[in-house]
Length: 321
Ligand SMILES: [Mn+2]
Image (tube, rainbow, N blue to C red; front, side):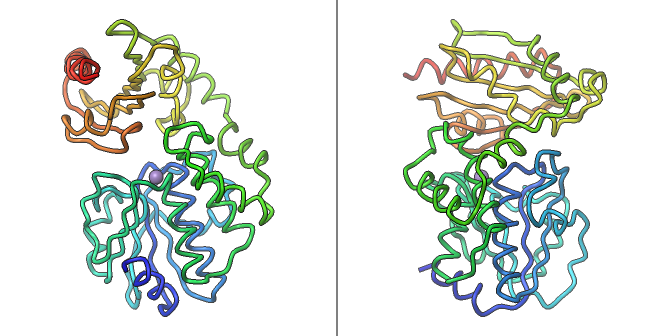
């Protein structure tokens, strides 16, 4: 079984390269930190990579100082681990250089994962990659401590939206509970990772909330962030992490979207659904992807046009019920 093969590589190897997707969320950061820390505790050598930018809310996670955003492929790695990436390009600009390190081990939970690894451990039923890392640690009998536990907790907590999204399983609660047994202070982590707003983030939220619009009989909720709004708040796009939840909170909304201007006539759509719409399918119509209830895509064109195209496709998905 693939899981046993990977556990074997973790036990026998000495040097590992670990990377996760650019614009990281808590699962991307937490899962490489957790796997990195347990390997270091076992006396192994690890290089951790994330292209960034790393949101302020993760600045105090245990081991974060080890995560590099520049890359020298070096040599002598026993394996390359790519975590929480549906495809290799998600790693960012270094994806091209990574082909030098083998075997490439792909650990993920996106349904649309392209199976780009030499070994692919893809489990869409896992709440987070942090949950899969936990199982690997158990299987390979790797050491746990509070740093490993904290990062697994963060991965699960952030990918389940603090245990509220549809992927919040009994197993997710079970593992999170076990992490508290290792000394993780869940309230402290929540304060840092889920709260921990900076003033610029709150200012950005203030202006973003003013853009809320409802469409299709209140079933689609949209918010928009322009470059101008970012600069006015002194913020950047990493400050808008989870803002898409606000239109999702509105009663009656099934599809929530946050549209962010990321370049000239270039927009990123972050999507969430509350119940029946598979937003990964919806995003795939525009070349994106993700999970059934959390997905994203990017689109070129004027704001008016990209919004209109999205709303017309979204209507089709709402009508399918
Ligand atoms: Mn994830």
